[in-house]
Length: 144
Image (cartoon, rainbow, N blue to C red; front, side, top):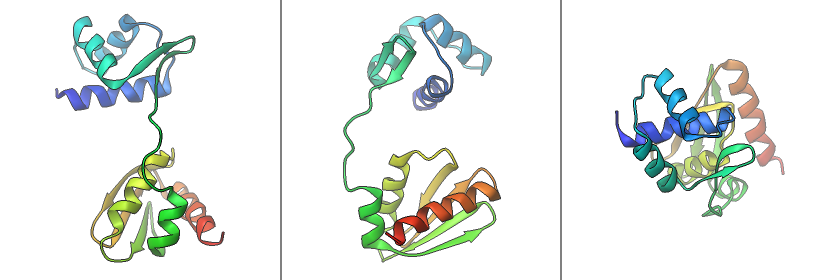
Protein backbone atom coordinates (compact mmCIF):
# COMPACT_ATOMS: atom_id res chain seq x y z
CA UNK A 1 0.00 0.00 0.00
CA UNK A 2 1.56 3.28 -1.05
CA UNK A 3 1.35 6.47 0.95
CA UNK A 4 -0.33 8.30 -1.96
CA UNK A 5 -3.01 5.62 -2.27
CA UNK A 6 -3.66 5.63 1.50
CA UNK A 7 -3.92 9.42 1.54
CA UNK A 8 -6.25 9.33 -1.46
CA UNK A 9 -8.51 6.92 0.41
CA UNK A 10 -8.44 9.18 3.47
CA UNK A 11 -9.61 12.10 1.32
CA UNK A 12 -12.35 9.98 -0.20
CA UNK A 13 -13.54 8.95 3.27
CA UNK A 14 -13.62 12.42 4.81
CA UNK A 15 -15.40 13.80 1.75
CA UNK A 16 -18.18 11.22 2.01
CA UNK A 17 -18.49 10.48 5.75
CA UNK A 18 -18.38 12.33 9.01
CA UNK A 19 -15.22 11.10 10.69
CA UNK A 20 -14.49 12.68 14.06
CA UNK A 21 -11.54 10.70 15.39
CA UNK A 22 -8.42 8.97 14.20
CA UNK A 23 -9.87 5.71 15.58
CA UNK A 24 -12.91 6.10 13.30
CA UNK A 25 -10.62 6.86 10.37
CA UNK A 26 -8.44 3.81 11.11
CA UNK A 27 -11.57 1.63 11.33
CA UNK A 28 -12.90 2.89 7.98
CA UNK A 29 -9.52 2.30 6.35
CA UNK A 30 -9.33 -1.19 7.86
CA UNK A 31 -12.73 -2.00 6.33
CA UNK A 32 -11.13 -1.17 2.97
CA UNK A 33 -8.20 -3.47 3.69
CA UNK A 34 -5.81 -0.68 4.64
CA UNK A 35 -4.00 -1.35 7.92
CA UNK A 36 -2.26 1.67 9.43
CA UNK A 37 -0.98 2.88 12.78
CA UNK A 38 -2.08 5.92 14.74
CA UNK A 39 1.34 7.49 14.19
CA UNK A 40 1.01 7.08 10.42
CA UNK A 41 -2.51 8.54 10.46
CA UNK A 42 -1.32 11.55 12.47
CA UNK A 43 1.47 12.13 9.95
CA UNK A 44 -0.94 11.77 7.02
CA UNK A 45 -3.41 14.21 8.57
CA UNK A 46 -0.64 16.77 9.15
CA UNK A 47 0.91 16.34 5.67
CA UNK A 48 -2.48 16.58 3.98
CA UNK A 49 -3.37 19.73 5.90
CA UNK A 50 -6.60 18.28 7.29
CA UNK A 51 -8.38 20.12 10.07
CA UNK A 52 -10.61 18.69 12.77
CA UNK A 53 -13.90 20.59 12.79
CA UNK A 54 -17.26 20.17 14.49
CA UNK A 55 -18.28 18.25 11.35
CA UNK A 56 -15.26 15.92 11.50
CA UNK A 57 -12.00 16.04 9.57
CA UNK A 58 -12.04 18.41 6.58
CA UNK A 59 -9.64 19.57 3.91
CA UNK A 60 -8.25 23.03 4.17
CA UNK A 61 -8.18 23.84 0.48
CA UNK A 62 -5.47 26.14 -0.81
CA UNK A 63 -6.34 29.18 -2.83
CA UNK A 64 -6.95 28.14 -6.43
CA UNK A 65 -3.93 28.44 -8.63
CA UNK A 66 -3.97 29.25 -12.26
CA UNK A 67 -6.76 30.45 -14.48
CA UNK A 68 -10.36 29.40 -13.97
CA UNK A 69 -12.05 26.71 -16.03
CA UNK A 70 -14.06 29.38 -17.86
CA UNK A 71 -10.89 31.26 -18.80
CA UNK A 72 -9.08 28.13 -20.03
CA UNK A 73 -12.10 26.95 -22.01
CA UNK A 74 -12.56 30.34 -23.64
CA UNK A 75 -8.94 30.36 -24.74
CA UNK A 76 -8.27 26.73 -25.74
CA UNK A 77 -11.47 24.73 -26.31
CA UNK A 78 -12.26 23.88 -29.94
CA UNK A 79 -14.85 21.10 -29.67
CA UNK A 80 -16.86 19.01 -27.18
CA UNK A 81 -17.81 15.48 -28.20
CA UNK A 82 -19.79 12.74 -26.48
CA UNK A 83 -18.94 9.01 -26.72
CA UNK A 84 -21.06 6.94 -24.33
CA UNK A 85 -19.69 7.64 -20.84
CA UNK A 86 -16.78 9.75 -22.18
CA UNK A 87 -16.70 13.43 -23.00
CA UNK A 88 -13.89 14.34 -25.38
CA UNK A 89 -12.55 17.87 -25.53
CA UNK A 90 -10.49 19.04 -28.48
CA UNK A 91 -8.12 21.90 -27.76
CA UNK A 92 -5.50 23.89 -29.57
CA UNK A 93 -2.15 22.09 -29.78
CA UNK A 94 -0.36 21.84 -26.44
CA UNK A 95 -3.33 23.06 -24.38
CA UNK A 96 -5.09 19.87 -23.30
CA UNK A 97 -3.19 19.55 -20.02
CA UNK A 98 -4.09 23.08 -18.93
CA UNK A 99 -7.75 22.38 -19.59
CA UNK A 100 -7.64 19.02 -17.77
CA UNK A 101 -5.98 20.61 -14.71
CA UNK A 102 -8.61 23.38 -14.59
CA UNK A 103 -11.37 20.78 -14.89
CA UNK A 104 -9.84 18.54 -12.21
CA UNK A 105 -9.73 21.52 -9.82
CA UNK A 106 -13.49 21.90 -10.24
CA UNK A 107 -13.95 18.40 -8.74
CA UNK A 108 -17.31 17.67 -10.42
CA UNK A 109 -19.06 14.65 -8.89
CA UNK A 110 -20.08 13.35 -12.33
CA UNK A 111 -16.46 12.94 -13.42
CA UNK A 112 -14.46 9.82 -12.55
CA UNK A 113 -11.23 11.23 -14.01
CA UNK A 114 -9.50 12.97 -16.88
CA UNK A 115 -6.62 12.09 -19.19
CA UNK A 116 -4.90 14.74 -21.28
CA UNK A 117 -2.85 14.35 -24.41
CA UNK A 118 -1.46 17.15 -26.55
CA UNK A 119 -4.72 18.44 -27.99
CA UNK A 120 -7.34 16.12 -26.50
CA UNK A 121 -8.84 15.62 -23.04
CA UNK A 122 -10.75 12.43 -22.26
CA UNK A 123 -13.23 12.84 -19.42
CA UNK A 124 -14.43 9.55 -17.98
CA UNK A 125 -17.86 9.82 -16.37
CA UNK A 126 -19.59 7.28 -14.16
CA UNK A 127 -22.26 6.56 -16.79
CA UNK A 128 -23.74 7.81 -20.07
CA UNK A 129 -26.30 10.04 -18.34
CA UNK A 130 -23.65 11.84 -16.32
CA UNK A 131 -21.49 12.21 -19.44
CA UNK A 132 -24.39 13.96 -21.15
CA UNK A 133 -24.79 16.26 -18.13
CA UNK A 134 -21.05 17.08 -18.20
CA UNK A 135 -21.23 17.80 -21.93
CA UNK A 136 -24.16 20.17 -21.38
CA UNK A 137 -22.43 21.87 -18.47
CA UNK A 138 -19.29 22.38 -20.56
CA UNK A 139 -21.32 23.71 -23.45
CA UNK A 140 -22.84 26.30 -21.12
CA UNK A 141 -19.35 27.81 -20.78
CA UNK A 142 -19.12 28.11 -24.56
CA UNK A 143 -22.41 29.97 -24.86
CA UNK A 144 -21.46 32.59 -22.26
